Amino acid sequence: MKNTKLALILLGVGTVGFLLALYFHLSRAPLELYQIVVTALVLVFVPLSALTGLRTLRKQKAGEPVEDELSRRMKDKAASRSFVMSLYMWGAILLITASASREVSLSLLAGIGGMLGVFLVNWAILNKDGVEE
Amino acid sequence: MKTRIREFREGLELTQLDLATRVGVRRETIVFLEKGRYNPSLKLAHQVARIFNKRIEEVFLLDETGVDGAGP
Image (cartoon, rainbow over all chains, first blue to last red; front, side, top):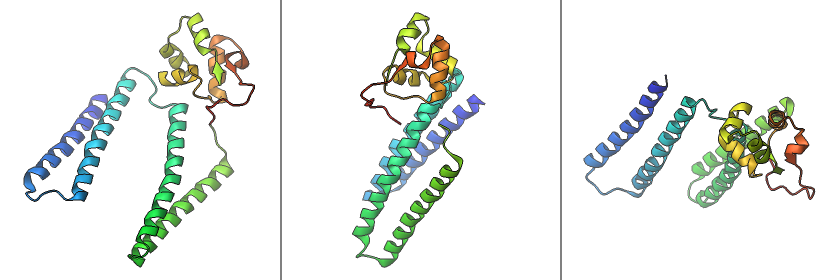
């Protein structure tokens, strides 16, 4: 099972690396800005994910817990901060694009409204069920 | 929150990994606890105190000023 997971991680990284190399090989025109951004994101997130996966496997092999209350609390805190920050970011994008396109603004407003709706539903559930940790 | 985990752990000749395994957390969590950078749940505090055969308030020392810098 662990060997299968290791093989999957290596296969994933290999596939992404191969596709990226193939893409660069085949594209003749100079890269546009969004292509550079996407490439940079892939080059950051894929190795990071692979390293996280390998670390998790190593811990599992050593019989250590992969997750505990501290790691869960850190994830919760990071998620809540990210949520608030993303609301501000989407708000700023909404202000920037407001004059350009009404449709884009409405989509952004729907997204922001959706985020707030999901937040309220989760808040209500937590108020009803309580928090264990 | 200050703790005496390191003192008690070394008294029992336990490594951080030993203690982590006994209470079912990662070694990193023990490191955070010993440095006073994490306020554990009541359940974990109980488990740690039980390993040392001490009361919780002997292991975890509440800062009297109420400023511990590692709140939830």
